[in-house]
Figure 1 (spheres, rainbow, N blue to C red):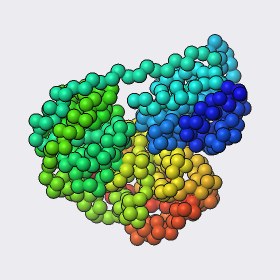
Figure 2: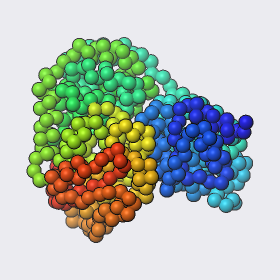
Figure 3: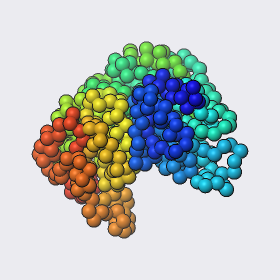
Figure 4: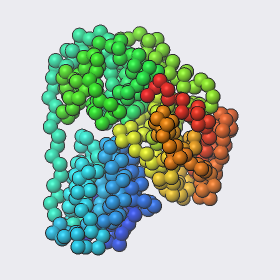
Length: 506
């Protein structure tokens, strides 16, 4: 058995069903051939960066690392865009990359590039492996806390993987601090998703926030769900009205990278984590004693109307006034009775969406919550639809994010994926325009003469419609038969209304 076949065996045994990338004619093609013969389907993408993000998304949803492939040099440089996004979002994947041998001067070679320096910026680790790499070791490194990308180069060298992080000891004093508190508030990070703490959170009777990346770890239709904590919420945000009433902030894997601003809380704070947490939040103590903390939290209770008032007031404000993105999200939720996966790009519509959308499960809500990486929505939505086609996936994106990976939508047509792409258009870069308007700066580079993509998506074979009212959107939504394949809806908004919708929120 060849080394590539042994590697393919390891990938197949791990339960990996898809691999993504743009193949070369060397070791990557040999691996692809071996994978296909073992039932692991290779998806040829149009851009390597999209492949990495599709693989990373599947890794995040499945708990098993995704697999991506690329050639050396420029191919790896393209792949790095998706690796960077996955690194920000803590998506686990193993990227197999062609490379020159370790003892070859890359500077004098065709397609030469310092891949090690680039990998260092966008991955947990870079290892050089022969064709007979142990996928189990690579997978364990990608999924260990904190998850992320591993770059495995097909070159002879040291297969040195990162050591496991220092474990946080159990500190019973943290649980005791929770026991003394009268009105604790919980903020759950993505660690809570990976640790499966959702049922424990559902049983509590205190306000539970999540970071944007962990949205859905608690069913947000439950009465004690307080929505998303960003660290920069203004007067309309629930964090602004609820945190002043608490006497203890309990973080669950709350880490600086998962919020927009990390700063000390005005109230005492503790954190439950499996690795040492940064002290920038001002936590008094950190512990791995999740059992003790949850036991203490279970004895606490807030007035449910107090929580619902903070959340309900914001929802009412977002849905009042002229047609805007909050109305679109509400229509999608109601149409699918919350049995739908939402994927968000970044922008003002995302600022509204992370608060307006009520996620029922963490695997049914995807967002670039840590990197705020524009253009990630289409690859993430495609990866999710490849991973699980039993529910419809709706990708919400804006004028700035749709063009980055629009070619990849042909994969949705070819594979009849249950994917609806919703373009929320104000005709430009809405969030950037705010600064330009405020400081009387040029807006010319921020406006798009023709923001429509309808003709292009239609030419791809994706049925679509352009709408500008709530009723028109609802009609277009009803027309989509999601089991038949993808669709596209372009929603045009009044730019002035679009600008005002985030006032008082962030």
